[in-house]
Length: 276
Image (cartoon, rainbow, N blue to C red):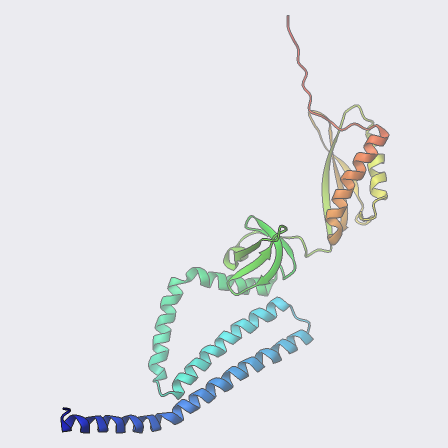
């Protein structure tokens, strides 16, 4: 049997609960309204900024990066505002967040370095989305530049994530910034060939290849007098998108031309003298 004073205490607790609940409902409703409105405003802000930046034809990489940063800033502000509407002391909360931020910052120094590296990449643009780059021992097409890393896709369709900190502090070879690319193709011909005839044949191949540009002017230079033959450096230019086809076609065409004209390429050889 429950004592009478315990039943009275339960009634008091229930009365206080309903009283506090009634007092808290307006704060809860206002917090929900602020949360919903805040999320809608953030979504609308992203849409407006995206449209404005698209009209100004700005870099899509910069657009995505700026939107991501501002979205997270606004979400933090919205979180603090909602907490304030619920009656939580924001002063102590901000102090706690500040202390937590310092601790997290010390623990995530590498991530902060990657974040700073991402900002440097966006600002100084050593490469953009769609560029073919070589960095950190990897090569591929830039698919996206994220807050902490850059996503590239290699020629065999593998995805590689490179930390922005290492990228911004390292050497980057960008194959897509300039509209033209030069190839230096090394050929080695036998000493018994007439050098002028060899050059004429190579210039004929260059002239008949539509991928090779006439400006800048192609050139054929003697690289060295090698142990087995004369080493020639053929310098030819092509539009960036035709570079691979130019190099491949040149090798095929020059081999055919050499065979037709009886020009021999050099081969490793050794003279062996036998003493009786």
